[in-house]
Length: 262
Image (cartoon, rainbow, N blue to C red; front, top):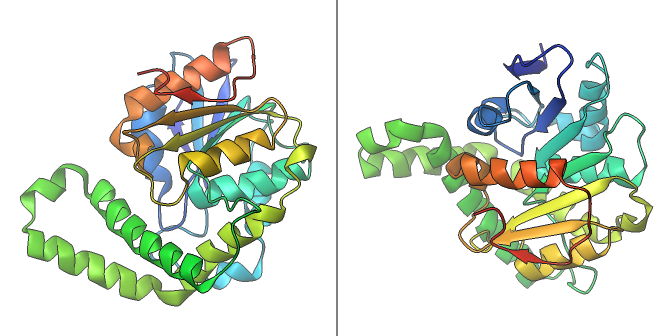
């Protein structure tokens, strides 16, 4: 089973679909899904880049994997929310104007390289360091309340083992998404898009997020200085409020919103 139901909702209620990032899990969406408005039905895709995978899925484009999950739904979602690597897969589908996608989408901390940022060795090394930090933060967020019960040395050992297991294959999957994102045909996107970024995210800077949103007609950008790459797990209430404000509003493009829905 690839589509996991997070919230049953009402039979005729809005359908919200979630797509997770690399080395992350469909379960990470539970705190956010549980804060959706009553009546919403929430589902999450269990994508092949989940924790513990062997990366053989890289032979097939990530957008194709995400499209296959959408085919399993009984109808087109009303809203789609995607994070990091999953957000890039969604971005590719948006640029292709895939008819399976909803009219409104939320991209949380996607991996985006502005066209004026070259693919250099220094950029490569900076991306590698950021990737290791993401693995660190991802594991800690998945541990949840258990983190306080574990010795710090044990947590550090778990993180080191996770980094070794994921290895170059995981990093290169991310770096390929990041480096190729500069050539995405953003002007082809017709959906209403919210880009949600955090000042504490080492991958997507506010400037890069602004460039990304600026390339999408009518896109809305929200940057919160206190959000990190896993803001939807750490601060689900605030992220849910931001998503609701976007989904429920009469859509008015705004170039930059700092600390929205706080």
